[in-house]
Length: 394
Image 1 (cartoon, rainbow, N blue to C red):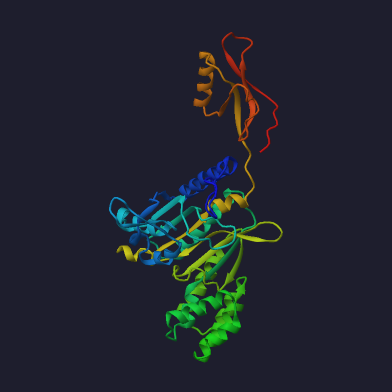
Image 2: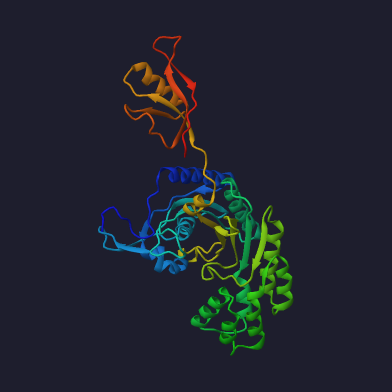
């Protein structure tokens, strides 16, 4: 095997895509800052027990492990940043009030969870700690929407669910962990035949509700159908009321509800959502996901309410239109003091100046050189910038 061949689902990011990713990263961080979110930068690796404590245990199979040659302890490369941010909120910030935190950095996965995915996503996220109300849920949804809008994504669809629905349905019975896992898998697959088999020994009302859940998806009217169909309970009504309130305040988005969607069930404690956009040929692409995970900080000794979302910038950049090339000034290469001074002044003013090395006049790919630095005909030893007509394709 050639030494330059990378592992499966690991790839270099070349200049055009890297430029686009970096521009998106800056836009997203600026958008989060505009909502009052403070940037944190957790380390890429930690002691394994810290990464996989509590909620992080679900990430065990996704986490690369290695041995620290300084201490001999096992380290892990983070597969998700949220447990780290929860640790920061619990132990380093230790605030009594609300903490709004954002982050952006690489995570590493041992395996992919869908075709064509990367094992090295560039994860951007934002989280609110310390507020249990729907106001925080709505703010996170609105921020996720704003982040996608700033990238140029249009036609967003908000898909919502709530894990408390299935909790309410199964509350009258005691199940083993294996039984719950099989039921959750059947619900996710909307496999009513399998649900009938799995629920055959359960009380009739529970079996009826389980088999009804797969058809409870669609627009907001699904919530009325669920209230009429499912066995009433305070937990169920609280979940349905929360979803209705959030749906009623979601602006400029199509809203759908899927009460059988249990992705991330072990992670979330309430509402969960995903934002989709049209990706061409009628296909819908999931670009951001999040929800409420109030138990995330418990293992760090501080069980605070928490809600947030995340997205992969590498996935996002493939779904949005390329941005135009950065305008630049083309300049000759030389050691003349006046030339070098003119170039330095232009760069200090914020201009991009590309010096053309001898023999390489046309090797500029990532900048649109629409101006040129040339000798000033009216002043000896001076330089001036003039517009040029140069077609440089992306």
